[in-house]
Length: 94
Image (cartoon, rainbow, N blue to C red):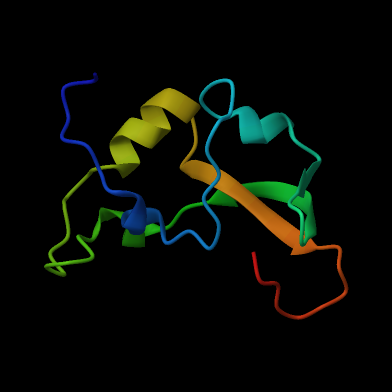
């Protein structure tokens, strides 16, 4: 859409990936995420480092992407949310 190659989700190293949101960056408005087995508090937006520019298969870095596109769209290098488990457990199976 913006003239750049798509970037696979593994570049962002997510622990949890959700689908079905009403639009892009809807998670910015969420306060809580619940599944049948766990509930998470949405704490803050996730700042991204240069690691997202590295191809996880080849290990080769891209000079600017996807950092440049995220900065252009979001005004900051941010993507996703930091969550805290509200279940009291150190690990959660979903």
